[in-house]
Image (cartoon, rainbow, N blue to C red; front, top):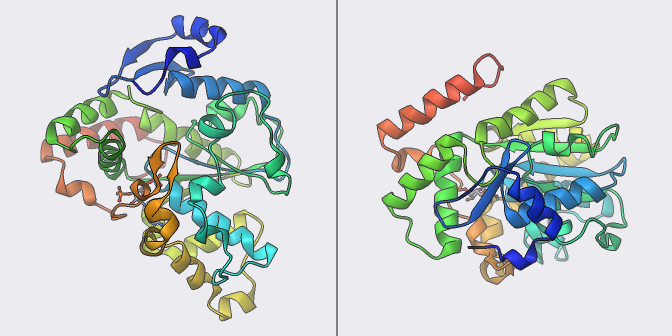
Length: 321
Ligand code: A3P
């Protein structure tokens, strides 16, 4: 298991004993809190966050279901905001050249609040503070109530997300990505009893949030970022309050940022070929980045089953897959 029981506080243990819990396909203990499944130590991070996080008006939180394009969204956001610090995307000292995007923008529940509800936030002194999360929106709503901070969510096709999860978790657990592993992942994914699942409730929380409060919640789609990158990065820049100037557009600044943040470029950087974060090799965050890759692995029956669930869960909400 990924979690040692002695890392969990007595209080969290007491809460866990009252929650639905199970062992996932990989032998990890997970439990369901406020409608979402967490590893025990992630739940502790969520509780710490809910208890201790004090939003600042300028905070930016990048949110996603795991393997939906988080790394890319982080890189783009860093590159967009660095412009105001006079770092253009071709600077030799650009932060993206020296750290993995996950090292630059930490996860609230997995990194910052993992151990404590009052972490040292000194390194975030310069606004805007950039955080990320895999929590569903409803897990943050009470804590962020009345805060004008901005949330960007990236949503990816459900089948491609599942396939990306399968490859990624096989890589980090150092097991072969066999069909039998895929089948057990598939079952859990469809049942929604997986880490940060159910997937559909996750995307719906942010989708609804973006409809209710579009100034503060931006809903982006991985597939659109791939098919119309220029439009989507401009949309992100506008939302974050740092639109491209005419002069920047004319000088090719949009394309330079897209190049800097491309999978090809990021994965070729020394820091991403060799480094690690939380015992995970940076290189595992970069694989193919293709739309529709799930076609190569899921049987038509599996595709059908997921499509049916998607149809049923998203029926009438205006979100199309
Ligand atoms: P695949 O496994 O389908 O290749 P996350 O960043 O949320 O962990 O998601 C990882 C997925 O995003 C992986 O998908 C990975 O290859 C892809 N990815 C990582 N960096 C990317 C980038 N700069 N541009 C596009 N896709 C990227």
